[in-house]
Structure formats: C-alpha cells, structure tokens
Image (cartoon, rainbow, N blue to C red):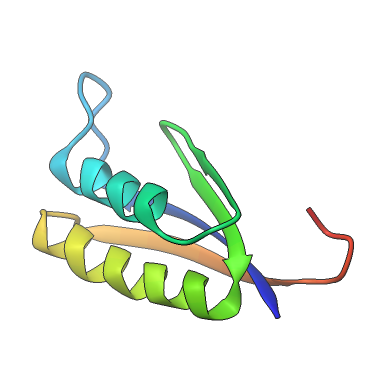
Length: 83
C-alpha cells in the first residue's frame, strides 16, 4: 500500500521559518519516501505505508517538541496509477 500525507505546522511566521517547520522539513526530507514537496504553507510526501507512517510519527513528536501548537494533516491511500 502507498500513502500520501499532506501537512502543515503552526503557528505561522511569514518572516522566517519557525523551528517546528524546519524540524518537520528535516524529518520528511530525511525519510525513506518516494516523493516530497515542501512549501511555505503546506507539505506533501508519498511512499510505502510503513515509511509514511513512521515519518508521520516522528514528524508529530519532533514538531511538537520544537514548539508547534497545531499540526494539520491529511492521509490518503493511493490507488495504483496515482501520483
């Protein structure tokens, strides 16, 4: 099974990326995922279910430890051919 996760961390800071956003980016970019798209207002990653779920667990824990007060995420099961 393949999954896609979309997430944002808050609070936002338009002047500079907050620590929780930087930590989230490091976790996702360092995970064993097939596709990663990191942006200023939302992030997306895709991969094998186990890799995505492991990354999400780490992301939640580290972003909260780094000061996130809200983390919004959506997790989708990808059908064959989805990209």
